[in-house]
Image 1 (tube, rainbow, N blue to C red):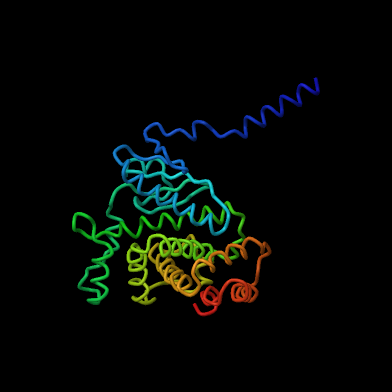
Image 2: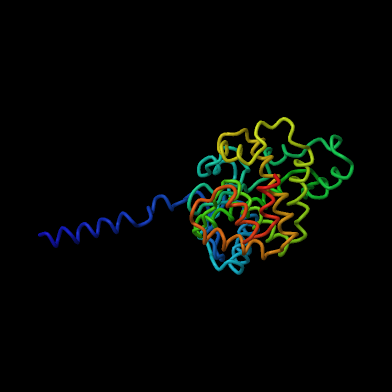
Length: 293
């Protein structure tokens, strides 16, 4: 009897460990086949799904070649109706990676993306020209669609460090890590898309820090999930610009060093120890994000 109960317990535990079939079922979505990544999309968006998933697949393959690790990711390309049903971020259009493996991307251009285009007459002639070049849509309008599509790769960065067993040390570092990975991939494999990646962050940073409640890395750590979205976006833009500078100074080698260092050092470091670690084992340019913010 005791042996029977033991095997019954093992069977129950095994069943509990199996993925919930209901949680994995998306009857109103279509599955995209032919890719190494599991992907689902809202009907009518097959071509857009192929573009997004294809880029994600290429990014994962590229980064795997640098660090020897492949995360498990499921990508969802959704219309507004399905976004409300499945996504975690309430505003349609913001790519996000809310749990262990799901990545959500908008299937359609939207008001959220368009809202980031400022009146061009408020920009310098040079910046206005850059914005028109980087963010003009096929129909001739302006939208930040090209930038937010690339942000999906930033979210893939979270899959890499979360599943890869890295100790990120600071919240700002996990965001910087993703931006370094994003910039490295685009610069190496899709350089034609650098204007779409770089123009918006440069525009925001050029506007200065006046009007933002939090502007220090300590403030970012303390108010990471509580600050005003615009304030959070300013930090991200600063970290995007830093990602560009870091790549330009050291190329893909810097990302590899950062990966190895964060994977090896499990203990929590003080600010002084972290700055020394970054400068001595990764690069001076990465260390400057902390020491010269």
